[in-house]
Image 1 (cartoon, rainbow, N blue to C red):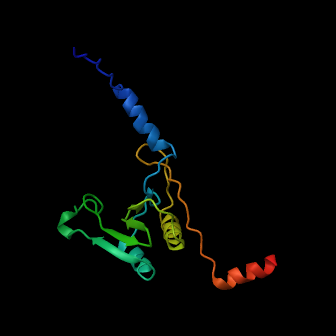
Image 2 (tube, rainbow, N blue to C red):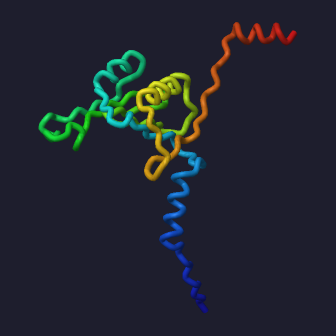
Length: 160
């Protein structure tokens, strides 16, 4: 004789929505680093000037510059806007005239070069919002700096 199992109840729509919103606003996110920051209100950055200052220290990965006919006469930022992506060691920064997106492809600790790129971007794009669609900055770890042999030797001498 075959037993018919009872149908499992699915969570309600509000329950699923509550779960999604809860993960947006809590800091228990364990995936790769992803953070969006905005320029000062009323400020449009010249992306090429920002890129020129980053080119000396970081690798330029991708450039998306729209053709002039893709923008409207009323607003230069409506539609496609220029975007330039830079990479430190593990951290990427996609910069546009109004916002920057910092992200990693895999969840690994930041290197000192990654931390430096993050600090530069956060200085240029200071508006950090915690509201719907703008989640809090995720927690991240920093790689410990390796000690050199001379530092290790001096530590041994100090301990003796």
